[in-house]
View 1 (tube, protein in one colour):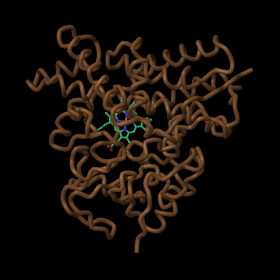
View 2: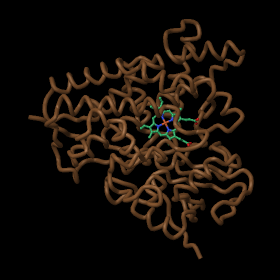
View 3: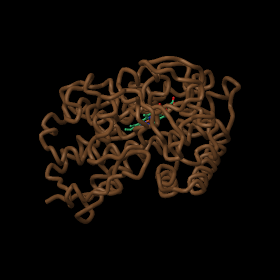
View 4: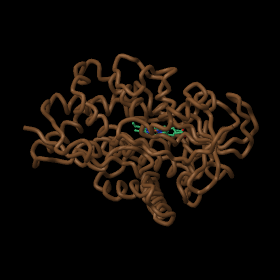
Length: 394
Ligand code: HEM
């Protein structure tokens, strides 16, 4: 008999997923869990089953679909139109197709000089400022925020406004009202930007998308606002947290820096796998009965695919709790899997690579200014990461 476990499960160590995952996976890679609101859901912790499940066409990402796991209270009350991550085919495929070619490896590679400039400028300012400094404020947040602002054509001067609201949306402590108000504010903000670009297009992605949709007579401001909002929110907070955690990993284990800069892509891939900061964005609801791994999923069942657990499955990643640059673990689930797999992954990889290479080349003696046990890790947020990262240098 399967016992019912509570979800989410706490992390006990700032590095790596909740230790309970390994135990649960060993007992049953698909288990029953009870969520904070008392509802029950399935939890998938095995790598192969996670990928198979996320490839199914009998699942939905629509948060309004009854049975969708309510990990964040109040999500149903925020306007979701145009939110790619919450759409199902064929609508999802239609919109995703309009955007994918903006994020190909080739397109993203062209952004390298600009990202390098942004990283260098942030490090210049860090070095010119006082010590110790908070690396989250000085580097981890500004680099991805500036990159996504320039790409979308969002004024960077407004960052305080959207970074603060993003924090509210991603915090587990926010009330339903706070989360809804933040989402409504952000939507209005992006909506006004989009409206401005309709009549005065710029050299940016949102302007290009307006044109593309108009070309096929499918332009709708609300939908483009949702698309833009997800890119803005998804584009800075996730990457910022990965930068901070990666820096701590490299400070704690300087040997990992041995291969930089040549082996940066492999190192980044392994850090993405190891930290798997977005653990349950890959939740779904079943829309048609089907069997998988000895379990029958029924229509209306909520399912949480624990991406961090799948990326630490020892069947696929030997000694998963070790950061091993040589393992070539690109098939991790840090960016999800299937039709919703992260659209910005190439950009995130490049930003991480540039930031880590530049930071450790320019400040090789960078050190933590507080013991690692005292650092404020985001155990209270939907995306794992760091609130602050105090660093110093000689
Ligand atoms: C290290 C950084 C990042 C991580 C760990 C991450 C993680 C993820 C994950 C796990 C998903 C899948 C959600 C699902 O299956 O429902 C996803 C989707 C998505 N991500 Fe990212 N992401 C990162 C960076 C970015 C960046 C930089 C952008 C934008 C430029 C971005 C834009 C998106 C979008 C638009 C989707 C939705 C795709 C769809 O539904 O088709 N992400 N991301």
